[in-house]
Length: 437
Ligand SMILES: [Zn+2]
Image (cartoon, rainbow, N blue to C red; front, side, top):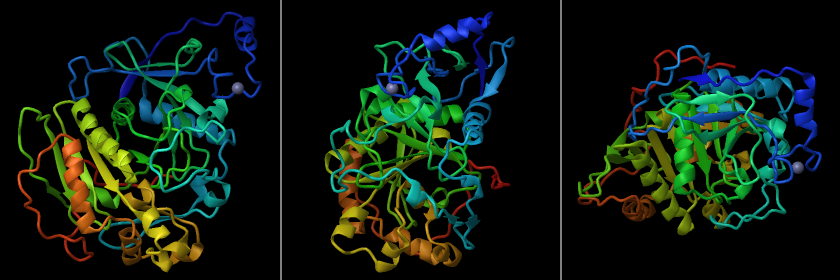
């Protein structure tokens, strides 16, 4: 996606810059909290709001006289690399071994021996999906501003704009920011933190989910995916955030055959199509279509809100530049508490969060990495899934919450088994894919 850079007044004196930097002290750590963020200048990316609510990408490069940058490559990945060169990450993710597991699905295994040792520890209970924000625990207001790449906010303009030296954030505003994940699992691994100063707990709301879809749309690249983990489904910080990274291979879940769930077309019809994965180790929903991006966003957000209000942990993957969204209710923590998770899986110490479920599996032990096979990956993920019976119960409620009425229960059959259906070709991904490190 192309966008324009807003011209900013030229700095004519070094004192000009110095005075603006020294005029505000904060807590001295230059952090992302209320002590330092208001009054700080953070680069601003303001994305285009479609006035006609169109789902299609409009023209963004109408102002020919202004320089253009690509949101994903020049800005997000460029700034991410800058933070890498400044040594802000806890380890070098580009030196982690990655391999595609031979087989039909192409599960992706990464050996990351350092991540679980150096990651910020989980500090809350895992059996409750909704928990109040606790300012005494780690949250993103405590990170340094050097970890922030830019603010990401709706603009007033018909085109997207990047303002490298945006005016300081006003006291009254709570900006949404994109920051690096200091424990990355892939190239360009970032966090989207909606309204950071509002200290929202990890729970989906309509506005924040739409913000995440806007980010996927701005990136406009099928290899840039956005993920969400609820509490109880391996979110590790109870402060609202989405994750995203760039990986130039198809994820196995994107190859899964799907089966459309037949719904009644009514007055409420918003053009959203909902399907279920028909041969994947983790049972899940696929949402796509929609008369507008907001229609699609609202359907998924409503489904998520139902799940979290009913204490059902879940993961979300936003794929295909925001046009396709996978939703996975899961029960791993509950199974684990009941002693029903296989010893084989427990010993790997794998946390089946959104990336693992999508088929990008981060392994902590060398032997698991070397011995990983398609069958072992399948077994591992099967432990995360709801049973067919439970999935059907949840499906009825999720559809209702998302504004659908199922026509009749036409899908008998399909308990996901490894041999049933083959992966399918993916239309939205380029054919020649290269893993870039
Ligand atoms: Zn501070």
